[in-house]
Every structure is written in structure tokens, then in C-alpha cells.
Length: 101
Image (cartoon, rainbow, N blue to C red; front, side, top):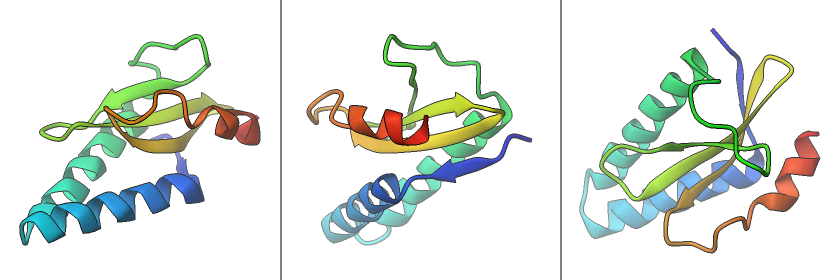
């Protein structure tokens, strides 16, 4: 199984989204967190399954929610650089790519 590291910024995005969904409806934040966890498990088991994009990232669409897990697969490790809403400014995470290296 491939190790996964979640950047602090991506972790903050996850917490913000969980709080948002929980405020909308009790329990929905938990459902979102679980969907992201399932996404991360898929990426952990098959990190090269999703297409490599021109910015060297890969993206996994979270089931039932309009979010993507943006990650890099570098040196046999998955680096989650964003947990992004699909309608948010695309590529806002681009500076994080160079931080992973």
C-alpha cells in the first residue's frame, strides 16, 4: 500500500468543507469526510490509475460531492495537495506542486 501525505493546506480545506456540510445538515459533514476517506483509499491502492495532467497532478472525483482530491505521485508516495470544490478557481493549488518537488 502506498503511503499518503496530506499537505496542511489540503487538510484545512477538508476541515472547512466538513464544517460547511455539517452546518447545512447534521451528519452530512461526516458523510463528506467518509467519502474523502474512501477516495484516499482508492488513490492509496492505485495511485497511477488516474490520468497525469500537464501540471503533473492527478485528480480523483469524490463520490456524491462536488470535490476533487488533487494529488501527486512522487517517489512512491502520494502527496495530497488540495481537496478542492469543483467550482473553485482551477489551479489555485499550483504553487503547492513545487513544494512537494
